Image (cartoon, rainbow, N blue to C red):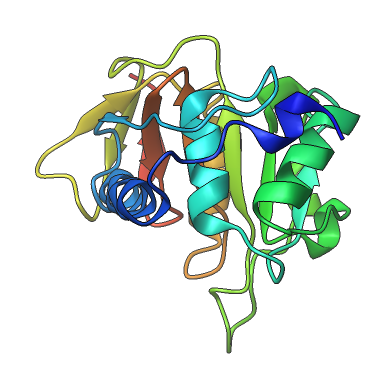
Length: 189
């Protein structure tokens, strides 16, 4: 087994996971608000924020889709060792991880059902740059408006049109984290 498989977990799992869970909830409940999330280190190119999300949100019952940018033996082994989460195709994924250009079309992921809208995929998008500028966000959790440097606009508008179905998103860059739930309206800045 590789050294990078065994390392990179939380130093203090219960405390670090609680901190990460709070940051994850805050990011989705306040779209466009930036959180700092570190303490986990997966093999490259997984950011510390994405690694902390995986350790906190994933387990043996949450299948993960890995985009080609993140589908490496080292990352697969790290996820298996630290979370036990199985790797799966997009159509059965509870979570997905990758760079925006490498992810399949959003229509390939489950968006939930009328009876169970929560049975959808949460996508963790790794970005080179994540700032509170760019697309204009409005909706629940936003007092007036917020801004976020999204990789596109149209797919997030289409996702919002599916509400209460749809996908939820986390965006990561290094230790920075932001969330975009399906209930958020997205417009050009």
